[in-house]
Image 1 (cartoon, rainbow, N blue to C red):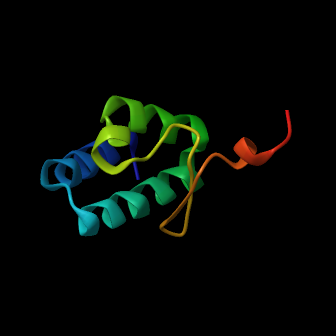
Image 2: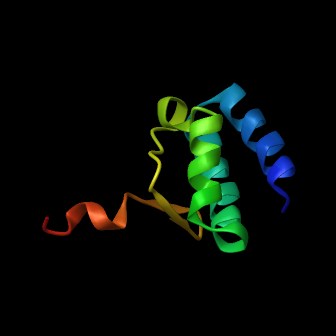
Length: 77
């Protein structure tokens, strides 16, 4: 999936909001994670304000439609 296409799909999901749309957004971000990496996912989260709409924070890892909070946040400092 291209970055532009992902933006289009995610924009549709954010316009509706809600739980089902959050799940759809997770699937889209999972695909972007596999194809393009974490930096692109973080960029989309910031660009489309997904933190406010769905609670997805930059650094969240998406795998198979599941959001895993920042993997390094539990590591000792």
